[in-house]
Length: 208
Image (tube, rainbow, N blue to C red; front, side, top):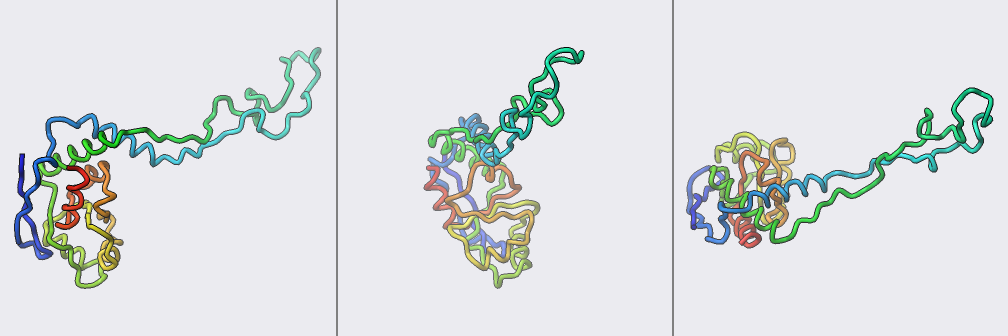
């Protein structure tokens, strides 16, 4: 299955067509792969630094708080017992990793499926070059307006260019990524995915 995408210039005019190779389109399988990959990505974002102290780690509690018998109270050996105020925490969180293993083939399948779905819904835009006249935010906004990009957008380039980084840095709904680092979650998260032609060439090599 081959598809063609229009290639636009920075003014929004069609200047060519990009033919997608057959191996990069996948709409028959990969739905579960997308789910597993996104869950794993979001899990990896968790710091896993929550930590509580057990009764062995809480300071104090060295002396028996009161005598064993004759007080009418339940016996106690430490005022740092988990059932006492100020005591240790039972089964509380400790630093841990939330990473989930996803095989490389599954990740590639997930990326192909996510990319194919975005193409199917018309959310992928290919631009010959993302050119801004200067480092100003309004220059980037003008290009997005010319491309009829409203809402959030993932801008993908072969490498970070200083002028584009500066021009898009203050746009809260625009994220700039290199083609080599785009992930499945970002492919699905934004309203539009904007590729430069060179970035799409590099991206296709990743998923084909």
